Amino acid sequence: MNSVILKAGTKYLVGLLLLVSVFMLLRGHNAPGGGFIGGLLGATGFVLYAIACGTAQARAALRLAPRTIAAAGLGVALASGAIAALAGEAFFTGQWLFLGAGETGKGLPISSVLLFDIGVYLVVFGAILTLVFALEEET
Amino acid sequence: MSWILSLPLIIPFATAIAAFALRDRAAGRWISVAGSAMLLGTAALLMARAMRHGVIAAQMGGWPAPFGITLVADLLSAAMVGITAIIALAVSIYALADIGGRLERLGYHALFNLLIGGVNGAFLTGDLFNLYVWFEVMLIASFGLLILGGRKEQIDGGVKYVTLNLISTVLFLSGIGLLYGMTGTLNMADLSRAVETVENHGLLSVVAMMFMVAFGVKAALFPLFFWLPAAYHTPAFSVSAVFAGLLTKVGVYALIRMFTLVFDHDTGLTHTILLWVAGLTMITGVLGAAAQSDIRKILSFHIVSQIGYMVLGLALLSPLALAGAVFYLIHHIAVKANLFLIAGVAQRLTGHTELARIGGLYKSAPLLAVLFLIPAFSLAGFPPLSGFWAKYILVKAALDIEGWLIAGLALLVGLLTIYSMTKIWAQAFWAPHPEGIAPALSRIAPGARAALLLPVAGLAGLTVLIGLMPQPLLALAEAAAAQLLDPTPYVAAVLGGAP
Image (cartoon, rainbow over all chains, first blue to last red):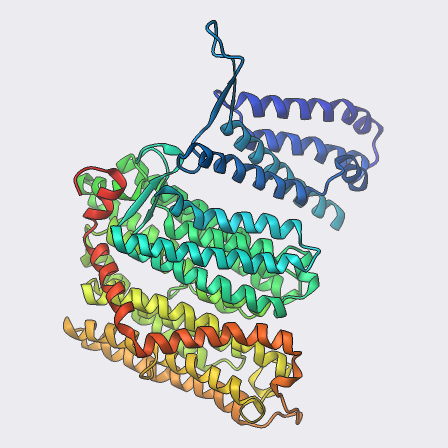
């Protein structure tokens, strides 16, 4: 599609969508959101870019093949489950690290649960883009 | 204890990721073989544990049942994971020679291992919604495998396959929703207790029927089997072998699990329907096969027919009949996958799978002829092969409760199976090749020949072994049936409490 308005709008919207997708991913830990919805939003950004400027440009901007991103996401998710082995607990048991925890506060919580969500984000992001790029290029 | 239950899921998924990363190199296919071998080792360990401790359960993520997802292995689950690992190893060795570089670059090995992971997940999960997720994983992976390569008839078969399976999935999901509404739980062990308190038996029966139809599509029961013969003859032989061996059996497993553990409130209704369906499945499958002339189509219809026997075991619901169903499942997976692998070798040698266009295998490749005879006769139920015992147990179970008609039907279908096998034998093996080709095994390069024949010979050996020494497997099947009929240890293992 060749539209100046769409191209100009896309320039701002793509960045915004990617930012919101990361916000959604991080927010999802204790509130509505999470890896799945974040991945969908992130993919929407690149889909919009592909519609406005063509899939070739979108692929170039993505740098990695979407299928590779999805496979990497699966790896991250699997690894996040396997971390529990180090603590001798059941597969997928959440492991927590509190950065800078002191007497005043519990610090910044980093968990294997977040890592799992990042994995889901990447799987959804990669899978959706694989499909959409393939469909866009077919026509 | 918990990791031995998670490993059959972790190994295939890790293998899939590694195989995907290395899909452009020859190492990718060896990773598949190594992963399957590791899976077999784990499955053996799981089997040993299940035999020693009875039902074993683990709570994923440390969330206690019925709130978290539970993985459970009783003897049936452990045995199914074991035979899955055997088939995975056999097919991944076969694929070394069968799957070309193009399909490998498209990600064959990654999809194959995802499928194995999905199958194992379905066998091990103790949570109904989780079972749905594993069905989806299997559906996605199998659809990918089915259309890999993108030939026209593959897409045609693939679309039918996915459409019917999606309908089944929707029914399954609706059933899950209704069941959750009635009982407030989806943990299978918890459900087994919770359905007893449901007062509305009519609604419960409706939900049971929804599950029966949903799993019936997956298992290719009459009259829902049409997708199977439409799809299974199109993909690569490795793919159709693993489909033929495992996919429909997951449906049968789900039927056995749900209709012994949860839906046993009105066996007069549900299991009578299952009995009729089993009989009709057996007879339509075998008659459908008689009308076909392509090896893979004949074998596909025979899958349908054989599924009927397994469901017959579930429908009769006596200890012996259930043991027969379990025995049949395991025997059939090995035999059926093997027949498809042999069809692949035959196609390589003679150039086709259409019976009219091939021949001469007996004279030029006697080894392949012997290897075909073993699973083919086993499928038809010749003593002393594994299929004889499987049929014998089921027919005896039917006679024990004076089901003369169904016992006679089972025997008749066995007879008709011989007809189809004889047709393949006469056309592909005895008749000379129409184009005068001598399809000797030496037409295949030695390395590829070993990769193709090793798994075939291994599975044939397993068939003979079960046939000559049925006692260990029968004992296992009887113990598994006893566990199915008395869910108390299963429930206790999952939910804790006094065993």
